[in-house]
Length: 353
Image (cartoon, rainbow, N blue to C red; front, side, top):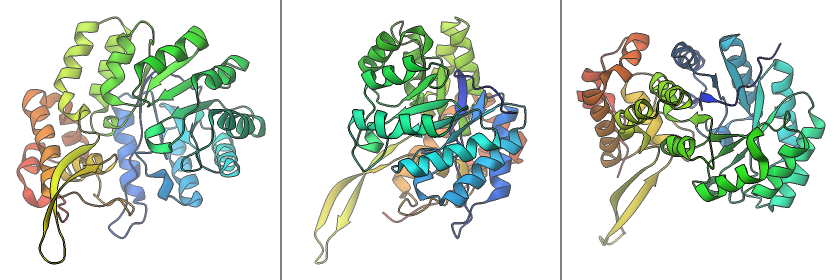
């Protein structure tokens, strides 16, 4: 029987570990799930953006969801990433997750196709809801990735028509005014989950948003810290929540990394550029550096140059020096020394500049 979906707390968007030849590393995936569950998260999200879902085959996708559900058992919930830019694929993935006992399904707005909000509601979300009964659906609004967005008005139509079927939204627009409009239209019954680690507390603190938790990237690295921060704020301990956020702040700021680099044209001309490395590359670099998983990302994502890796190491070092208690669970679970790995250049994957 599926564990009921709780639209609150911390749900790590699980990284998908791969071997060096690009196959799913099942033992590393199991170890990661056991790590975050042991740290008290509300639930886990397999096959989200952090899990590199666009590069997974549907066979791999279904395997990862099934494995997560089996591994967590009754310990926490599973929010299965089942979205696609193809409605029929989303129906397949959602139905598979429902049959296995997922708590809910997360559907990202259709990427690349560029549907209007009307089309997203009518030809995507409503079709999935009709085709796959008995499982809650969580829309995932992230226009920076998808190139489109379910509007607040259409979200309100979905939620108010059946609050139990559409109980929450993952908000990754970065637009607080949009989130306030979500709340205005949907009322108190809609749970707003942060899709940006660094905006979680501002979204929870804003009385016009009242977010209830986060679907988190850094929940892979510091699940206890994220859980403690969200729980403290939910309990009204604003100062305590802010203190935790400050201590892990260096990590919350580097879900993406920007560094300057150089391109040399044939003939020798040098050009200055800015390279932006997006989730999950910085996260997986840090996890690999700490000995949690391998660094491999499915191409076209690849290893970062030294300058970007140094940003990641610097953030981890700042947390280790200021609040080591939040990284010690990694030592205990993975049998590593954080200090030694931070200082070991050989532990860190470096790509060409």
